[in-house]
Amino acid sequence: METSNRRVDKLPLEWVRVFESAGRTGNFTAAAREIGLTQAAVSQRIQNLERRLGARLFTREARGVTLTIEGEAWLPHVSQALRSLDRSADALFGQPLQKLVLSASASVIQLWIVPRLAGLDPGTQVQLSLTTMNIEPDFARSNATIEIRYGSGHWPGMDAARLYAERLIPMAAPALLRGVSHWQALPRIAVSGPRPGWQEWAERSSDAAPSAPRYRFDSFVAALGAARAGLGVILGSEPLCAAARAEGALVRLSNDALVPEDGYWMTARKDTVPARQWQALVAGLCDSGAG
Image 1 (cartoon, rainbow, N blue to C red):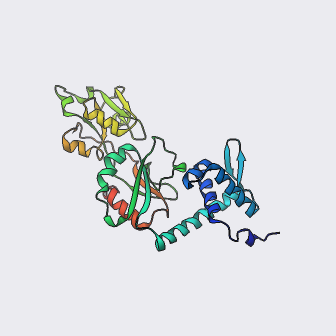
Image 2 (cartoon, helix red, strand yellow):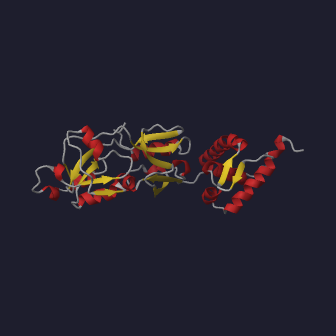
Image 3 (cartoon, rainbow, N blue to C red):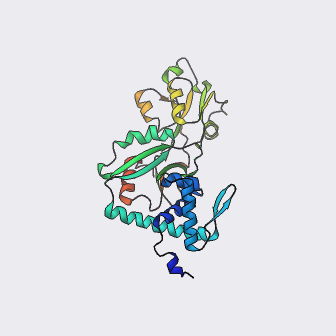
């Protein structure tokens, strides 16, 4: 009978990486995509690993796979060991550029991230790939290294830096205001998603309850385009609308501002982004006055 030490003697690293990916994503198909194998190859390597260890790591069911008690107990140790191995390899033998994937909404990428990329420290040595996330992203299944999240800034196991201090203000194209005594009578433009909207504006300001929005968009950048075209009044994000206001495409309609408690944060799982790169990205992409 094999001893415990011999079970892990010369254990193929590829099998261990496949297990970590499958356990983290909870899906053989997702692990196959992440590693660059077929699903059948992932399944075969998991079976080989289970035979070598003499223990079941996953329970196979019709609807997918789940970690066994043994697999769930082993996964965090494997993840930590692989991160340590990757960090040491990067430190000693790393390539000049580290590949990072940043995931955010289309609006944040277009209106905030892209205008600041040219200002990143050239010494950051990062190859940045930007991907657009959905309105309701599944962070647990995300393959992104860095994610722009909306919330309080407190997520267990995550580093977080506030992207900017959010302030929401009614704005409209100047042409829309011609001959209008009260902007409150103009059509409203709404945005789906986590940000507060017109109802919250009415509750915190002196305005009466708003009428139903004339237009609703699933992204802020699309709603901003509609406002610039003179279709209505948008509850604009002051940071994201800075360029439009500077161009004179939008004007502020109220001295009041809605300041949400939550906001947008640049986040990464702890120990996944080297400290030097993280600090450079925070300095280049986050507003230093955001807190």
